[in-house]
Length: 331
Ligand code: 2P0
Image 1 (cartoon, rainbow, N blue to C red):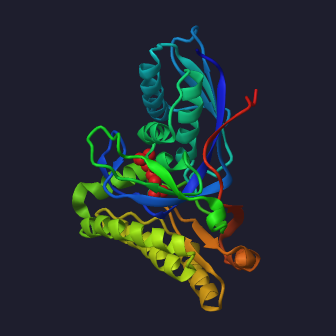
Image 2: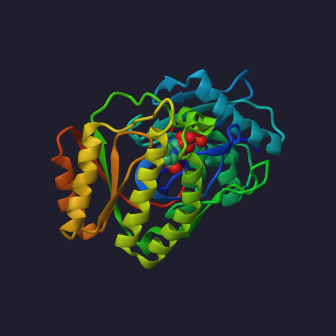
Image 3: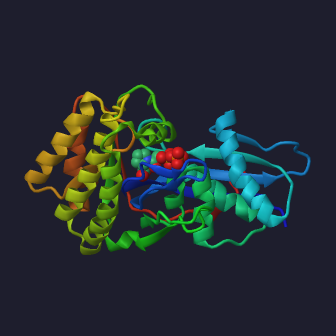
């Protein structure tokens, strides 16, 4: 049965990163990655199958989605329609509460929300694993925005990607950390993650293979640090992993340098705060903003310190959240 359906999916921040694909069409990673799910920051998407439409149409934040974005959306919708035995096109509308193009990806929450809403709209009852695989085919990191809490994305081995999915390893209550996003005033980022990963995979970074090997070890160390709620151990692996990812980008030819001066100032600020006793650590995605995880009792002091760094536009604060979910139609 076809019906209008709406879903919210949260954004996520990788603690050990996804940066390198074994398949650029299916978004199959070369290594596993681990992430934390953000509570309120994400995407709400409404999917309305409509037999009168000749093509799928999608509005994102009241703007029509560009052809490249539409092609990825269609990939997810076509997979759902194939399983549902339907050829009916859909009208889609999506609203982001994630600040885009500042190193916080909206594609993760966008494709997770799409997978959950569209599968319901076309009458499919899918498992979390199946939804994660579907979301991944739109954007790799979206695989991690289905489950919620602390999430592990298995790299998988099969060529069709059926074993490359993410699942929760700990829920948010296990370690209810605060997550601060220090947004660096910056122009829109110049090189998308999809593009950046292609450049890196072209083999011109001498560090790339070592980076992928490091990810295999880091995902284990990170899971242990989370299990033990050990901030010192978490800081070592999370910060080391982010810096290693940026190192492999910087060693690329041409180099990829996402950092701005305030990015470096924030790194030093977090290390100083930790030396002074604050329980916190940082990570950086493919952008200039810095994300800081910290114990709730330290969140205020850490946030104030981050906000005082010159060039910081704002410091967003959130917590570990749940996974993607169907919601009442927002109209
Ligand atoms: C991550 N990033 O693990 C890493 C860290 C960026 C840096 O996942 O090409 O937007 O759509 O699969 O998912 C961003 O990559 O790339 C990303 P595609 P995606 O969060």
